[in-house]
Length: 478
Image (cartoon, rainbow, N blue to C red; front, side):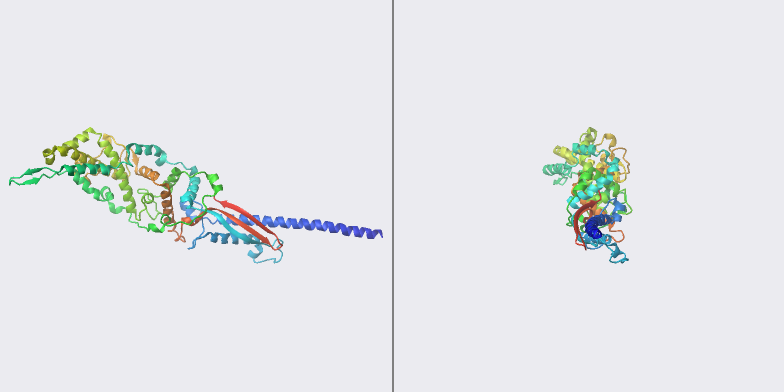
């Protein structure tokens, strides 16, 4: 009888022990299901980031994932499908391997919901996502000599009004004065009256203003790149795809994008006249960012015209203060028959000659810059290159000169870029990236607004044993 008591006691004890064991096993299974889900999510999201665009990294040192994956359809659902596939293969490794031991999975987990609700594409917030990465990349790079004193250069430009002053209107006002005064008349031997021609030497210089600047300042204009693109097919001319803006976590790590750093990046990665890149479609890329035209010629012409305008302001400001040059212009004006007959023409003619002289000097400056020389923002008598007679023979008076001091072409470009609207500058920079990436194999449809660098996924998992898990994770390049 006593043995029977022991059997009943053992039976009751085993029941309690087995209940505890099975509870522990079940708890271990739940923990294992959760752990497998977390591991599968981490592996899957890291696998998504591992699909970064190779050409974008190689050419521009940027880490973005192209959600079109080289196809024509760019949508975040493509990435969701990739993430689901990666996670499922890690939750059910026996399925991926062909099922070596079917029926032995004690977790029996499957992916449920995969939804990427937030993601930052390069063009979000007018390119703020792109500039955040650029700021990170350039953190260990010096700004370089080309941007070292740009704050001082901008101050000098403002001091002399190079960007804002309308020299063209001032010049035309003197020409209007001449028209209002009119040329004198004289009696001929036949007793008739005729107008005395003004023969203003400034007219010869002003006639060349209708010619393209490049045709005037380049020794061989035919050597300018003839590449043409269809600018309308790039991101600055279309409505870009929208993500959800700069990721909060990424913004905390990187801070605010720095425009000056972004400009230094442009000089590091993009070509320009005199510093062309072999990989590029357009050879004058920085000039495209400034002008946005379809051809290299048009973009370089735009920059040359801007340089001419700036130099004409600076040279006009200077020449009006140079008493020797003002005296030369006055002597040339006095030599005109019309002026001698009507002294009222003296002042406006003199000033049109000074404007024409400053214009020819400015053409010489642009020629010097495009040839790799330097030109100071504000000149002295020693820096002046042309003589007063150059206004009657503009093309023949422009010579080769390396420029002894002042700013280089690249430094003038830096000032132009700094003064440009930052959103326009950023979007056109992405145009250039699209142009060059599309030249590489398998990337003919590449677009920057299909590239993301951070994403947040809402995930769920279910188990064949009745368990389910949910989580939200944010991953990215930051």
